[in-house]
Length: 464
Image (tube, rainbow, N blue to C red; front, side, top):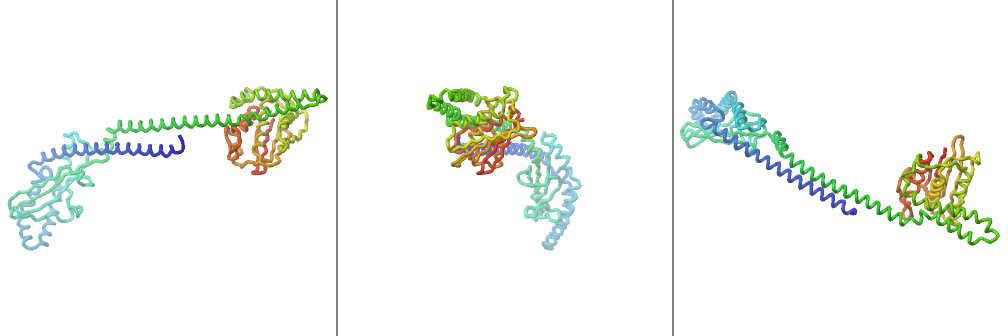
């Protein structure tokens, strides 16, 4: 897996989400249409059956007939007088007719009865409207009568008789009826019933679709989970591979100090004059023994670095100055000529002692020395080790003239495997300063760092 797989994965997930959305949306629309078809057919059949011999609602025809019959002579006279007179009569008649129909409408009780008897959704809302009303004097030619302030929607005129449904459209049309009589002095009326409850249907359909939605969500979650596990395992595998590669590439550097010290000490013994052999042999053999022991422990210590704590570290009492001098002298033995190393003793009490694990202490000091040399581009490199003593504390300061650190990196340098931009093309595992921090914590010491870019870095270990 590489960076190309990330956009591919995102695109794949996006396609999956779109497909799932379309499937769910189409399922919802299908269920919605099924509900609409079922409700329409049921209400249409029941409403038509109810109005076999009536109009609008039960008793509606009687109301209309009682009002229209006395007006036929008035309409006829107005039509002979002219369009304006006919319009005025139409508006007056419509006002009377609609007011009477609304006042005497029993459509609420009829609609609820239809809902209850046919087991339909009780939250359905309806509107009963008149879309056309015309009269004829000869049974053939009709003249429109709809007029007045009752008209709703001038583009598609209709008059509301009863109901609360506001959005009246073709989608919620239940029944549309037109009733006329082919004889003189009669009328033609067109009316329709609309019913809908989008919100109620929406939640009802969602409840029925719950298994589909849950399975869809589960499928997406499983795909995401599988991808996440795959990606996490890949990251872990990549990290392990990189760590293994770094370790193999850096093993020479990590063990450079003890191996070089042993080689240099051995060559020094080989090159000694006989007169000096007995005098120096013990010194060099002691160095070889110390570094061999350190090399033997170093591998085990690198594998168990995270187990360091104040409870499992075996400590002994050592004089601080001789212990540090020994570490500096051993390390100095393997240095090139362009590296100057200096030990400055500012202790008030030269024989000051501390409880310490000698191996851990020496390795931590060497790690700081290694970094001081590794991150130094000067032709003449320098390392200054200073022993400090205050009223209530002892300290070791190790300063270099290397490339330095930015302030934001002060704490990150102690993180495990952290390697800044300055580490490019430089061997190492990113464990050196992490090891120093673990040793300090295991002994209860305080570790601080100060640095300026391009001027060097100072690590301070406060021992008490």
